[in-house]
Length: 89
Image (cartoon, rainbow, N blue to C red; front, top):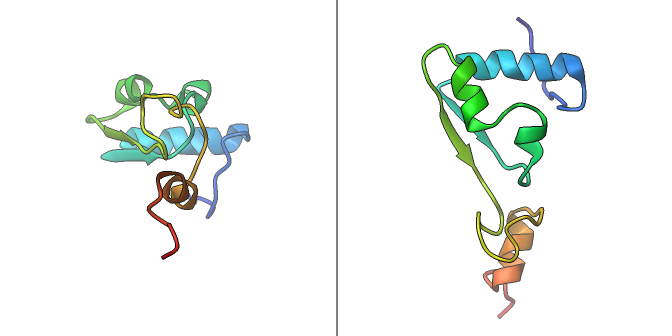
């Protein structure tokens, strides 16, 4: 199967390709904000059920998986600025 360079979860054909790739993957990692993987059927339990031999799932979250900012979208530079890591000296 030929795969495009970028797959978009909003497109049904791309979701099918992602599901196919994930069913054969050893590791599935994502950095979507909470709730996105559930909306597109890519939760760890759904991935495990469709996996041919098991899968390791990893969710990356800019602000952690619990706490007041857990549901906020973010990326590395925003998280660094929020915690002061990227402070100018």
